[in-house]
Image 1 (cartoon, rainbow, N blue to C red):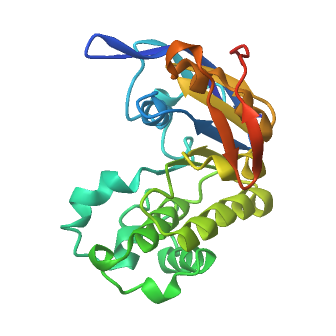
Image 2: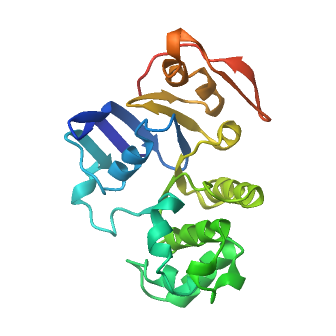
Length: 257
């Protein structure tokens, strides 16, 4: 079943097109990863998909319905923004973790304590229940924001750079948790990341974004993306490598669905 479908979408800010002619279909129960250079429109794309922004052209559908016309009960999507988006508010958020999660619960308000207990256990942060969000480490805050999104029992989870500013151990646990969440709970994951090492192992489908979107139907194919080449001067290619990625040069390929 198709969950998200984006049709000929364009988004403009300050008389400049941030996204151009985006076409995308995301089926349920997969992990779709978005990669691309800084300023390529990744966060803008995510904000459009969760309804925080509205495109100037084109449509965004969720289960064949315009997302702007859906109720919270119909639009069962959990959103985890970049941790930096919370940096200012978190300095004033003198609330314990359990209340941070409780205040996010928009639907299914029965058995709230049971649901909070469940998401804390899922992320193995039961010991943080009564800790102030303000005083948590970056990795702990990110896990709380994940728990907050999961408390509403979403069928799709959208995350924008979920490991930015967290330590290596927390990064490993978060990516492993997301993979297991998809495999065991069958939750669709839409993920923006700069960590190229994890992309082949976690992704079913990858979108390379730089205003236009280039979609690959296998996790490892993103390393043949022209997005990186187009960022290099005088036609030079960039070498992509990592502990889980062989050394390869980036060739051209076509964009599309």
